[in-house]
Amino acid sequence: MEAVLEVKAVTKRYRSDRGIDRVSFTVYSGDIFGLFGPNGAGKTTLIKSITGLCRADAGQIAIFGHSLTEQFEQAMEHVGCIVETGISHDYLTPYQNLQLVARYYPEVTRERIDEVLELVGLSAHKHEKVKGFSSGMKQRAALAAVLLPKPRLVILDEPTTSLDIEGVRDFRLIVNRLAQEEQTTFLISSHSIHEMERMCNRIGIMYGGVMVKEGLVSDLLSDGQTLEDVYLSQIDQAKGA
Ligand SMILES: Nc1ncnc2c1ncn2[C@@H]1O[C@H](COP(=O)(O)OP(=O)(O)OP(=O)(O)O)[C@@H](O)[C@H]1O
Image (cartoon, rainbow, N blue to C red; front, side):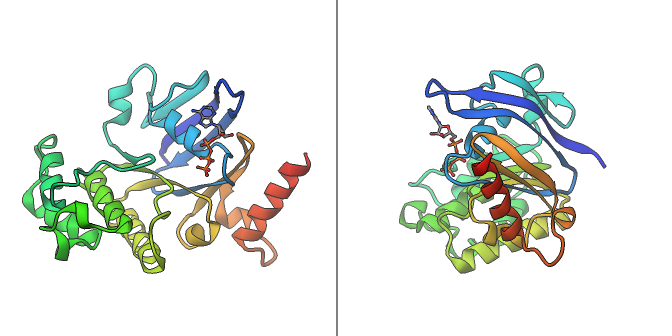
């Protein structure tokens, strides 16, 4: 199994003395990796460190075998990410937004733009300005832009926050479909284990800046436990430690 993302002993401390401490984990090709933890656990800090939006104080990160610090461009070449808010221009339509993104990728065709709009469920709205969209529709438009060049690793920070129940279900279907049809690997953070339970094959649980548990969902579940049981018992243990 190919290691797509290797994170080794990554530490990032803010001036507040909070942050993340010696976080290590690996995401393998084809994984849908769910990164869970309560507010302030360090998920966004970890994702920002992985995507180069903030510089880790210590540790190593490699993506597709390329060091993030020494070979940033190669490391990020096949990565698509949305951290905090996705980028889409409000005064343009989703179609025009995708045309803009496509200018950076000569291999992206008009058919691919239509395919991605269909995938995220925006075909019927592709010629309406993003300005009038609900936050869930804006999230779909941002996701379309990330998926356009067929990234091999997609990193999403809290992608389901503005989605309604149907939107969460659609998101899950999109992720599963891409994992199967385009062999896309995912790293997705969330505080809602319910939403991700049916999607992830591997999870990491963070608390207080530390990765308290990590592994295959199939290994973590035993004796009829749900992922929520595993999550809550890990958080309780970490609180008591
Ligand atoms: N720019 C910053 N300066 C100082 N402290 C920060 C900064 N960003 C985050 N922190 C602190 O670092 C810790 C981890 O925050 P982070 O945003 O990574 O957590 P999170 O798991 O993503 O939380 P949430 O689920 O609420 O988004 C928190 O205690 C937070 O207060």
